[in-house]
Length: 323
Image (tube, rainbow, N blue to C red; front, side, top):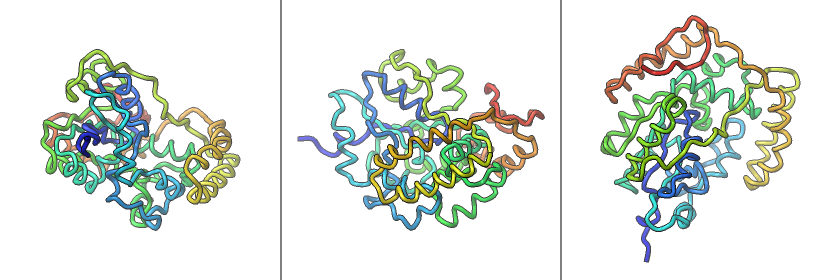
C-alpha cells in the first residue's frame, strides 16, 4: 500500500517566473527517468491546505488564476499517480522560491526534496514579466518604469505574486532563506543564460542533481514567450475587455474561461510589435534597489553576477553571455 511519501514529488523547479522554467519543465519531461506532473504550476505549497482567499487576489485576473491552484492534498498527490515505477517525480511552481511559507511547507513535507532554482537578470526578468501581463491585457500601466514604481502599492493591496516585478528578482534573500530550511546540496542554482546558451550541458547538470542518466533529456522550443504589444487605442479597448472578462472568469471553471478567452487573446497578440529599446536611465532606476540583493546573491552562492550590473549605454535588455 502506497503512502504519501511514495506519491509526493522528489524534486521541484522552484524559480523564478519568466526565467525559463517552462522550457526546463518541458525538457525534463523528455527524460524517461523523470516524471513531471501533468499540471505545470500546481502551486500546492503556496497554500496551507485551504483554497487561496479571494480577498487577497486583487490584481486583474488574480481571482481567476487562484481558482487553478491545487490546494486539496489528495488532488495534488494524484498528479503523481501516473509515474512509472522507478522514475523520479517532480513538478514546477516557480513561485516557491519567492514564497517563504512555501519553502517551509515544502521542506517539512519532503525533507529530501531536490530543488532547481533558475535565476535571471532581475531587470530582464521584470521586463519579461511586464510584457507577459501587457500581452494578455491584464497590466493597465503602459509604461514599464511606472508599473515597477507601483509595485509596493499593489503588494500592499494584495495583488498576487506575479505582479511583484522587483520582488520576484530578489534571489539573494530568497536563497538565503531557502538554505535555512534545506541543505545546500539539495539546491541547484542555474542561470537563465545557461539554459539558453548551453542547454545540453545545463540539462546534464540537472540530471546529475536529480540522480538520473545524463545526455537523455533534450531541449524543447519555449512556449511561454509572450509578444510585445504596442500601446494603441485598439489594445486599450481589448485590454479593458480582457480585464473585465478575467473578473467574470473568477466565477467560472478555469477551463471554461481559458477556452472562452482564446479569441480575445489572439486579438490582443495580433497587435505585436518590435520590442523597443529600453532607455538606460530606466534600467538604472529599476536596477538600483536590487544592487544590494545581487551582492547578497554573490555572497550566498559564491558566484559572480557582475554582468547583471552592466550599463551597456544602448539601453536594451539583451543579456550578455555570463563570464
